Length: 122
Length: 155
Image (cartoon, rainbow over all chains, first blue to last red; front, side, top):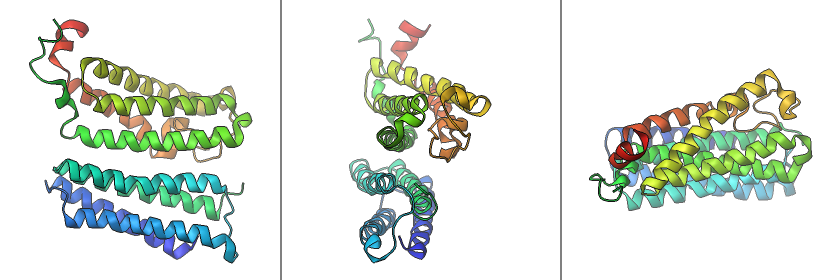
């Protein structure tokens, strides 16, 4: 796990989440901007997955429990496709709010993953 | 009687802001399931009672999520039952976890620790969402109460 990348990811997820929440509460349907922000969050998660797989081989092992780390990561990876699917099926403002909610949830999950990797001693 | 005395389709319950509620329930169901499965596989013997409660809460969140989405009077009642159970659960387990953690076999009251469950310390480890959500859920169900139920069951 790369520390600065993880923090970048948390910040992007928070910003994307607030952005979608605001758009949704303003009554906007899911559009290229809100779906794009969610897609960006997903792409960063995929990058995080690649980093997490590679890191132990270059002398950067997790201090905490690896299975617990991956439960968070895989759960997080599932959220944007599910919410995006929802947004395409039901095009109203609440779908945009849901995009925001899952981005914020992902921010918390990534922070937990960071704690597990850096601090938690198994 | 119940079938044709419902002029308003029960499905409207899941419209509007309820969508967001369903999404948050879904996320919490996922979080509780992931954590409890991991705890049970990895360290069940450390705090069997607490981790069993963890699994039970996960199951209740899953059923509640489905019940909020599924149409029909029966699912409405299931939603009320599971969400009411959650409120009782978070209050009872939350209180015990703070006052007498030993009763649950917990060695610490840290809501972020390795033995923490969704309901420990009223769900502090989950930003208190487990405490707020059932209240919102019950208010929401009340506002969206289907007419048939109002007439036949609750009154």
